Length: 423
Picture 1: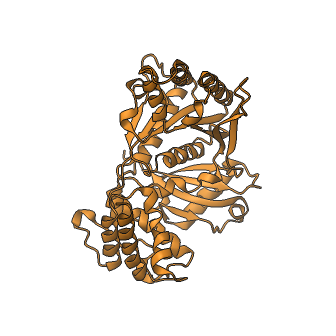
Picture 2: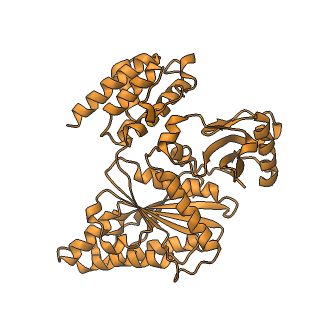
Picture 3: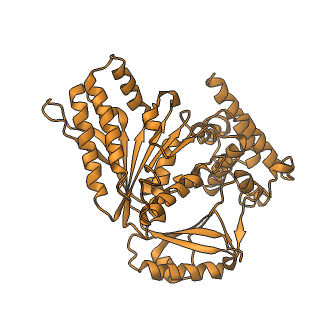
């Protein structure tokens, strides 16, 4: 018997909503069937059902399970399905809108003020709403990481013996700066909090700045490490909470470890670094914690840390295929706010159907021109690619509104200038 594909549907409650999740899912299911055809990547904000109007901000039609091929997404930018042909998996959640709280630790007797060591969010957080969808990669990175997280939860729930099958709940994302590693970690934690809403009442993200672990008074660095992880363990003790710990620029730990071993730094510092590794090892026994780490310098990461990572994922500069998708999302946003003038030929920026395997033959010349700009943009980081549309308008358009044709021409000029400026 052929299994139906599973499509994920996320339902954001209004702040004042009090209807049960079960009843809300029932109303959403009826609304989806009334629509008749659903498209992945669609956000529904207008409803025929008054219950949904009163209780729901947005219904997001997300990805199909296993949908991780960028070429397939480019070949069919509007994936349409009838509800009876798929299994709809509904995720109801409420957004926390308080933002990040700064976590500080009292360093003790030195007379120094409390040391800020981390930022703390309650998840799902409005700070990260839409972040997952804005990140574009070539090889199913996001989907694979989400599957890893879900598998970790499954193995924990089933009571798999970690002495027989080992996993450490530790992910390392590494690669050049500006490729979205930290953003991906935050988006992953946010998405996981939504997808596990039936199991946990809320999620938490603790972002640790690894540089802050090392006090200028080296003898106190170990105290900072222990106190910080003691705070994290207090969060983990709440079984109703999913806790994600993000250690950014983890290579700084390795640098300190190597310099200490070579004798160029005090021995107190290496004890602090070893304490971090010990604390990470201790947290693997908790089923409700995930540790996410990033690094810009792969050569600086020692074997002791690498061995602990379940997944070591390289995040490189985007290919022109991914750049094209990024630029399309930017143009779509500028059309939404009427900076770029809309026209019937764009069909909500699907630009027709692309077929990369057939030489990208496309009747719409704006597609070809945007593809050409995407090729020209290879070598730019994802961070810079998201700035290109702004720089295009600021430096080369200089008008309140502009046609798509003119804007794409101006984008080419902006990319050329950016590459010249970075030489």
